[in-house]
Length: 480
Image 1: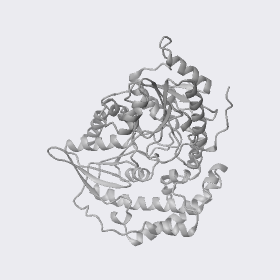
Image 2 (image 1 turned 180 degrees about the vertical axis):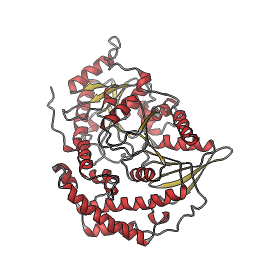
Image 3 (image 1 turned 90 degrees about the vertical axis):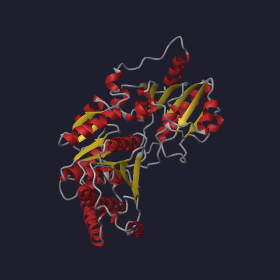
């Protein structure tokens, strides 16, 4: 048996969030920015090391541009995406277009875009505005900017005081006052600019991809204050990283996700609506373009079974997934030597194409292993793709949803278990287990190794009709 190494404290990050929330005090009080900024704070994003760097970053946010003329713009539905992740942004974009085609006023935005979605006779007309991250554009003023600066300083002092009761690991993460001050300052700016924006637009529904992400957290809190129906389009693992939920409603894949969130939710229980997974629907449509790189990979894999591993490496110093990826690639390399008739693909995380995965330095020595940056939806449509593997990626759920055989690497006793993934994957706890599984998959007379039993309709509800359910729910709310 392989030795099971101790993995870094980053794999206990969910408990860090739980400990943080427990000690920052009531969310309803004056320090809501402590709640809204918890993700960049605890993941050390946008780290600021000293006072001169802090001042430089603060001043970079004070960039006056001409205020937008939003006096004639209002909307029924406001849709926010925190990034371009394929698990949610394409779905939310298409939902906005479907609603606009039914004559609803839709505005969608992310940190780098702000646009109205208007139907025309033949196509959707998108009107773009300057970046949402420009605070002054949305009703800001020099006075409010300075007020946010001062308020965030008090927030930082309050957080440092409250952190004395947190566990040592969390205290270490929060030991830089300049990073704390800067992230709390940004949250204060978001509260002011988004509050002004909601006052102008008067949306009836706000849909975001999370109460735990910047912008999404502030929108959930402001929406509750302004009595707007807020919806979290949930595409995460249900862990203590994502609670407490502030939104009034949460759209989830299936009953398992809803049940897991109910177990850990603190405070008011939101309405859980099962809508299914739209990413699965998108892949089943097979509506995509084959790139030259993909054609080259396909030619390399011709006549072979394909093994796809989904990397989860992102360089975050707190999550520290490097050791896990290095060990996973070691298992794959040892297995690839024994299975030359298999083609092993290592897929990078979306938008991490230029980041080298730990353990991939000697890949040139393994002719049947290739690293790829192709989109998951493309690779999952390969006929010779026989198995999809990851340590915990939600891509496993999507892969199982279109009928692919899925394995989950569990190389350490500290590997986090997720019921939503466990019920659709075969656990692999050693390289010997991986080798034996591939032998069974290679032998057609033996058939596939037995998976956990589950009812597909329960685990993957509303398949091929997910966006229809989302659209119908919006109209139900607007007409209710």
